[in-house]
Image 1 (cartoon, rainbow, N blue to C red):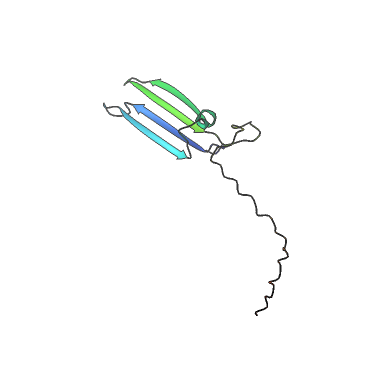
Image 2: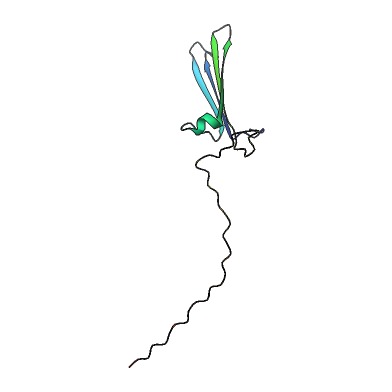
Length: 104
């Protein structure tokens, strides 16, 4: 997270200390999980660790941040990114004076 990632998720599954297998999930930050941006923003890896007691599986997902230059992340911003522009300064418009209507 200190290197500029928006979010990360680590899943460790297997026989950790007991005879029964468990799955532990650790999350931090913001992570998307559906749609086309997953292919661009999520970097994932899977490794298997062979221990004396059995096999331990580790899955790591890292969500990259948007980078307009494309060096540290995808160049396309997220589709739900909202940009708020500062308001334009309005000139004082001349309004017509109310016309006096004679009452007959």
